[in-house]
Image (cartoon, rainbow, N blue to C red; front, side, top):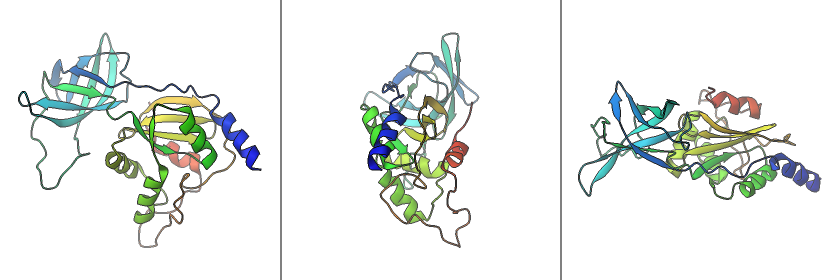
Length: 239
């Protein structure tokens, strides 16, 4: 039985292109207006990808002042939308009161070398880790431990966003029946899809060695997942 599962897992990921190297891209803001900015386009920019805006105070001091998400591209330019950057929020420190402006630097594909990994079973987990050598995957036990502590057997977008922020990860990889993908961990925009094989069996809410991710009656909306694929598809933001 174990051999059959390993063969199925190998077939699952054999269709992957093991290349998913989205390079970090830096460029100055050309124009900022009404919550959006225009930047120079690049093949490294994907609609739905995210990044940060860095403001330079002087020759030695700079700070992240906003998040951005790519909303469109064309004609040699791309448009990004400004969002609040709260990944490094400190309650003792104020949020920078500086609006992004022309000359500030946009860094896209920020933290895209690190990814959460949500897969249905151990065999697929091992195959995915082997397929994407250049990606640093955050072990699912870290997310599983958080969900167990919070009594959340049905992780939400906000749960994953929190885990990505705490783990300094920019992506989330999700493997489902006959389809797998990388999505931006903040916007949940799908960046890259892969056709993959059938899933032999599911561990819910996903593969992790953390046991007893249970619910409690006094916590509303903490019911267990009954359908792996349906739950994770519902979290994705479709174009």
